[in-house]
Image 1 (spheres, rainbow, N blue to C red):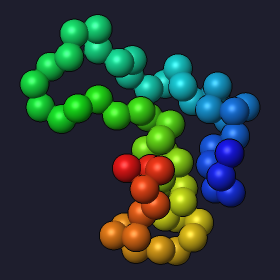
Image 2: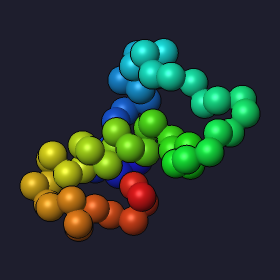
Image 3: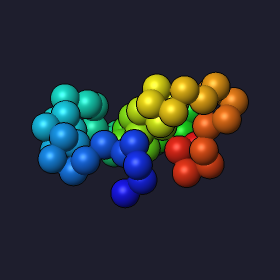
Image 4: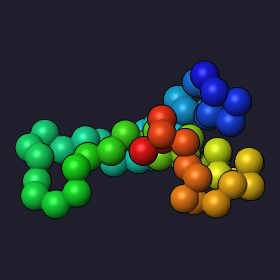
Length: 59
């Protein structure tokens, strides 16, 4: 786990509040993992870096 990543205990609490991955993929944007996106947001907020400097593991 990286420095600003959401801990497993917190992820368990919020995971049920997010939509599930669709069984049949639809056209448009590819499905992204919610946890990876949330961790990327925390990384930006906590590090103070601009969005263009978002680390590759969150893309």
